[in-house]
Image: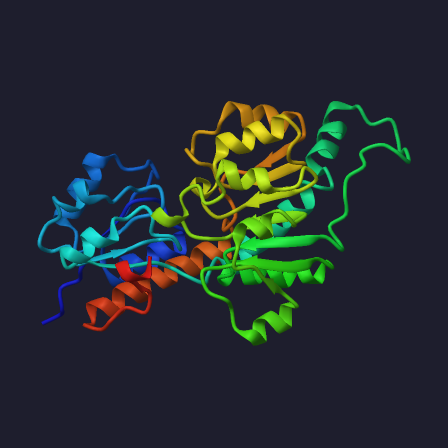
Amino acid sequence: MAKKKPLVVVTRKLPDAVETRMRELFDTRLNIDDRPMTQAELVEAVKTADVLVPTITDKIDAAVLSQAGDSLRLIANFGNGVDNIDVSTANNRGITVTNTPGVLTEDTADMTMGLMLAVPRRLADGIRAIDSGDWGGWSPTWMLGRRISGKRLGIVGMGRIGTAVARRAKAFGMSIHYHNRRRVAASLEEEMEATYWDSLDQMLARMDVVSIHCPRTPATFHLLSARRLKLMRPEAYIVNTARGEVLDETALVRMLESGELAGAGLDVFEHEPAINPKLMALAKAGKVILLPHMGSATIEGRIDMGEKVIINIRTFMDGHRPPDRILPSML
């Protein structure tokens, strides 16, 4: 007799190749129109599913998990972060949580470097000048930006993505500095010619560019606070492709408006998908470049994420520990 396939509920539209494979392997309930599920729909999903496949836009909190059915044993998150899931409550209820680490590292690092170049070199200003018909030809003093070669880059969070950014930035001639919970291996420091700062405050005060790469946890909420942002030099730039909540957005806006920071490149926002209207105004003024959380948005990356989800589900259903399990102690 064939083994019964687990019921897998997928909360958002995934790449066709991933959805097709899921349908082949599992009893899969898809979200074809890609409309985000309401909290009530998420509750209904956890009541019936054996496996839930949410994304970062789905809030799987204690209120949702408290209504989970006995059959729900795995939450296989389609994404690297798990700040959308109450991992402690899930663990207490005997529900395993997994994520998809590693597969979006290179894509996010590429986008970070794109912003790191675009903001000082005023790419958005240049595009607007062409679109508006304001360009009258080359001039030796027009549209001047700043080079990044020779500048100091301060990386906040030297994990997979932070390290990938460091490698790219070093190739652009930047000097690598970093702050991390733990110092990285000496061999990696040597490869990057990187300087470790145990004090985030001291590092921020000395950098030309600061790039954020730490996860969103209770400990990192507003890690880049108003006080810390004030430590940065007026000529400095800040780039965030991690999580919006790590950065005090209101304080950042104030400093950009008053000229206390040279500029910013943001792919994530504190209250996304809502964007602070003042940030929008600063973007029009050329002080910031804003992107719609697209750091990992490549076809290859999304398919790789789906394959990770499938491996985690199959491993778990075969009675083994899934490779990407997240425990509360890891957060």
